[in-house]
Length: 344
Image 1 (spheres, rainbow, N blue to C red):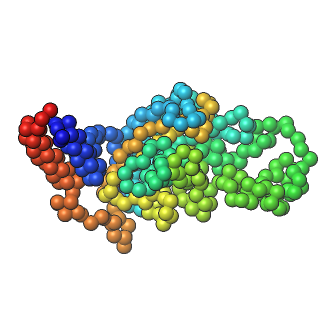
Image 2 (tube, rainbow, N blue to C red; image 1 turned 30 degrees about the horizontal axis):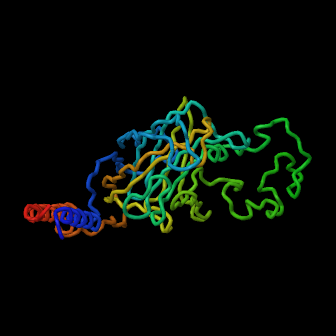
Image 3 (cartoon, rainbow, N blue to C red; image 1 turned 45 degrees about the horizontal axis):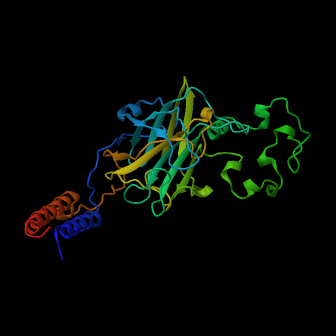
């Protein structure tokens, strides 16, 4: 016999189905919002002291130790970072700063670990899992590495750390270079298989201290091809603080890259590694998703602003949400009426 318990179950299932189908959350929170300020002229791609950064509102982003999947970080030393962003209608730049007592910018010795910071952007609508995305929810990551920055300033090698080391020569390399021979001096790159395979870690010269990557869940982090590494950066440590700049064109033709359209809202997440704390790979401090919005930027001459067509008022999220809650209210009233007349 159909009774009150059956009716309640049916009403709950109908309400859940409606909320799920129309993707209406039962509860939501505002969260942090990072606004990319519109500025005139060239962006300060290598100048963290530029006055242009003052046109952007700084946002303090809390970080916590990554304890979701192995390898865990049991205790994080970096609890927060500060982020700003500016754009000029063609390019976007982020300035990320955080306190760090030690400058760890060398990976020559196996016992050393680097300082790093990463930005992460979803490649599809919505917010996938904030730690490396998920299957069907890929993310684009920009990873700045302190050792790559140091290599750009002055290439580091074994003789950098061990000044008294001695070798006659490196086999298959230019013999006139002796101890100074590097991977670029090998006459046959097959004897440097990592470089021959295009591994960015073995590159004799880094065009940028930032690696452009893609991920779709734990264990899926993959570097984009060398020809697709289109994110530039600059980092400097001074007086116990890292200041790192990320920059890229707003638009990208690469399918694994996030493309920014002024006027839209995006999401960004942050991660920081403290080399002095032995942090690497999954051992890091991470943030939740932060809203990323764009101010109105001046458009370059001859370029039309990309604006998504405005939806009719009856298709807006607010109207759909209001309508669905109205339907749920009617269901509740009707259900209450039927409930009062059913046996227990």
